Image (cartoon, rainbow, N blue to C red; front, side):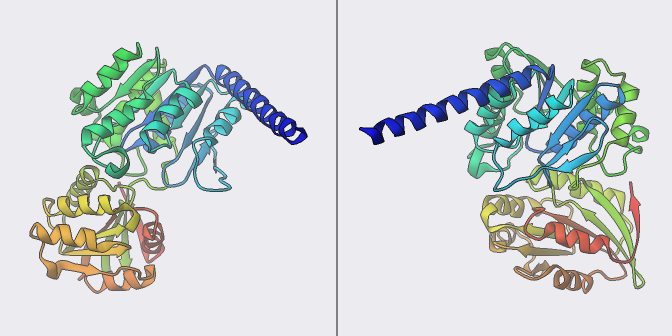
Length: 398
């Protein structure tokens, strides 16, 4: 009997602690008047940083948190630090982020959704963030093993972060009907970005960024900043000054023992649609090279992604060499060759060290080459990108 009473007392104590923690979290949420929950297939980290930069420039005390290549907490002065994780990523860490923003008297918290599982995305919004404003960048075919199997299922998963009686901003058009339905169900106002708004972003405005940013991301972030009372030009200047995500697309020109190499770090682009867009954009930026080399960093635990990239890459402007690194490269190679890719253009360096991959790529560059990494940041991509950046004399291209 005594043991039963002890167990019941323990459960009662745990329930009380949970209730107290929940009450403290709700109090912290109330202390932050504006909470912006950012979700989408691609561009979440960039849009989070852009919005935060624009709001800071407008004099609004803003905290932000990105998941991106590296989980980061961005403070009201624009400084940032890495989010400590004692174990694997867990959405409960958002409670700690909210508490930090509240302790800093933030008027706005811009926070990137870190969940993939559809249920966890919905729980992140309904239990952890309670957003006043939501942003869904786009809905493309990625993580189909978790959010699929169809692209429309991805849109439905992302719709889990549509808030109740709030505002939703999106640049998605293909699956806009899914978000319209979710917004009606939750009495939320939907603001969809038009193509004209994206086209209003001129080359002069884009030239202010230190990295290759997407007009769609900038237009979406500007729309949110304007809705919160920040002048468009003021917000744009703040975005120029914002620190880009470590995985942001950059292109470096490297003079390496008489060779002109242009390395594009596109490892953060890993779904077929955004990767294809980035590949075309980089080709347009540096057309005057002797060879084009596409490096795909594969992960055996992302086999569905490798299959999609293998299917898609044969329809892109061709490369002279396709380098497959990482793990599980067979899936990409099989799908690409099935669709007509010349097997002689494949170079498989699975399991090799970054410096060995670097040397193997050099053998195929000729006197000048565009080299672009894509597929996955983690699992070797980040290390190879760093190796390219640290070699030779570099000039960053914009």
